[in-house]
Length: 102
Image 1: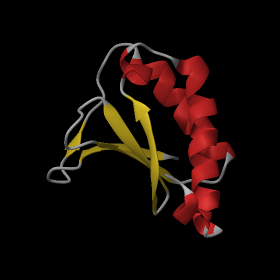
Image 2: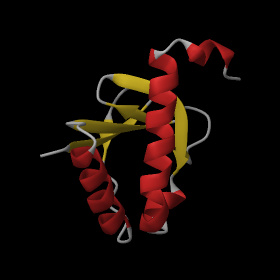
Image 3: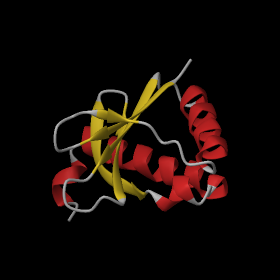
Image 4: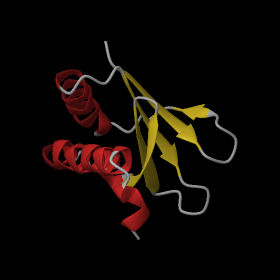
């Protein structure tokens, strides 16, 4: 089972994504993570912009964020694509190319 967490960057505390439209998106995140071999996915709420959720896949915290409206507006059709982009950022970082990203 995939563990999905939402945490606040300010203090590391966990919060729940309880918006009524988030359920389908969370199901899609679980399915994507399971299919791609990730046992946990964490979304970190930005310190300065509460709408930015920085993505962490497994142990790798990435320089890639998803807008919270993905969850609050139930944008399940785009979350897989966004996670694919995040996984691409993870691969760039592992290959050492992240130093060229701005």
